Length: 145
Image (cartoon, rainbow, N blue to C red):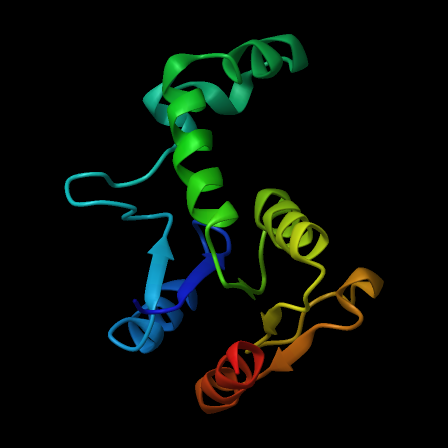
């Protein structure tokens, strides 16, 4: 069975599809944008097209919506089953949470891919870093060895 990699990033990150494509075929890669055939991932607009104007109470309530619960369950199942987590920067809060959760749960260092300048984050200390796709492939291989 191929080793499983969870790629955490932002929906808006243009590097994420390139990372998924580079790793697929070598590893079993979880792509939150296409987690399964016919499933194009979770987005808040599936619950409400006007989600960006929600109040904090509406946001908290939406976390309990069946679509949100299903999206969370799908991502968490893949995250819990991953042999490695790769964080593709720049990312959002959810991806940082996923990366931290995986590292904390496993006690292992993940791989942070930073192909462009980003704001420094102290809590990525101890992670493997890559700045090119070649670096990324090497760091993933080393992390899984």
